[in-house]
Image 1 (cartoon, one colour):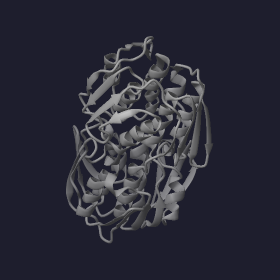
Image 2: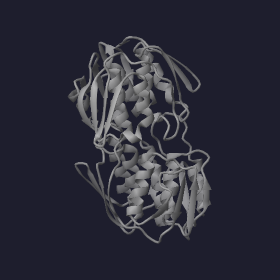
Image 3: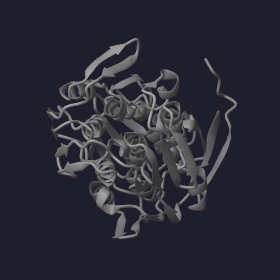
Image 4: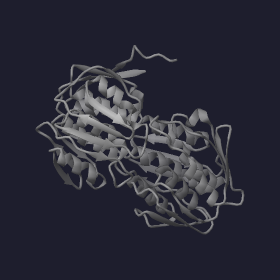
Length: 424
C-alpha cells in the first residue's frame, strides 16, 4: 500500500486534460456484453476500476484489450452468466452486468457488489424493475439470481428515485426485451446520455434521451460499435475547485462546462473567474474564496461526487457556509479526517457547516473513498507543512495519474510506500 506526501503552499497553474468519465466507461464496457463481436471504446481512463471491470468481463468469457486510451471488448456468442463476489467486491459498477446478462442469456447470477463506503445504495429499484420486465429475481447467499428463460417483455416502470445504476441496468435490459418499455423518473446524468448514444449506435431504439422519461423499443439483436467516452465532469470539477482553493489558474482541456453549470456558478460566487470554450474551461482565483452554500442533488443539481471538495473549499474560505448532502447519507465520514488538518467543520445529519480558516495544518489522514481522497489531497495543498494521505488506492480508482498531473500544475506531491499500513 502507498500514500501521498503533499507539500502545502502550492498555487496550481497550467493546463490539465480530462479523460473519459469513469462513471460512463465502466457502464459502456458492461453494455458491450449485449452484442457479439468487438466493441471499441475510446478515451477510457487508465484507472484501477477499469482493470476491475475488465476482470469481470474476462470471467464472463470476453477478451478485453487495452491500447492507450482505447479498450476493445471482444464478446463471444456464448457468454457466462455468473459473476462471483471475488470479482465484484471492489467495484460497485459491476452490478451493471446484471441487465445485459439477463437480456442476452436469460440468466444472471451476480454477487452483491462492494465499492465505496459512502452510504446505502440498495438494489431494490434494479430488482423491482427487472421483475416488471418479466424476470424472476431473488437474492440467495449473497447473489442476485435472475431468470428470464423466455426473454424479457416491455413494461412501464417508475423509479422512486432517479438512480443512475437502476436506470442503466433497466435501460440495457430493455433494449432486447419484446415490445416497448417506458421508464419514468430516470437519471439524467451526462453518463446516462452517453450510454444511450452508444446503445443507439449498437442498434437500440431509444427515445427521450436526456429527459426524465426513456422509451425503449426492444429489438431482436444489437451489433458491436465504436464509441468515444464522454469527458469526466467530476475530474474536471475537481481541478476547477483545486484552482480556486489554491488561488491558481488552471485550464481544463476537454472539460465540458455545460455538464458543470451549477458547479461553475458556485465557483463564480466564491469569487473565481470562469471562462468557457468548446475545447474546455479555465478557472482562476487571486484571493481567498468566499464560502458557498451547496445542496447536492441528482443531475442537473450539484453532484454528490464533488461534495468533499466543496467542503474542503469552505474550510479555507472567508465566512461560514452549509453543505447539504441529499444523495448518500454517509458521505460526511471524511469530515473527521478534514478536522485533523484543522478544519472547523461540524456535521448534523445530512448537513455540514464549515467556518473558514485562513489556512490548515498538515497531518496524517486516511482517504475513505475516491472523492474524499481527492478532497483531502486538495486540503493538503493549502495546509502548512506536509500532509500524508493514506488509502491512495481509493484515489487511483477514479483519477488517472493524479500525482503526475498535480505536479505538472506546480504542486509538490510524492507517492511513497505507506509504512503505517497493515492488514487486519
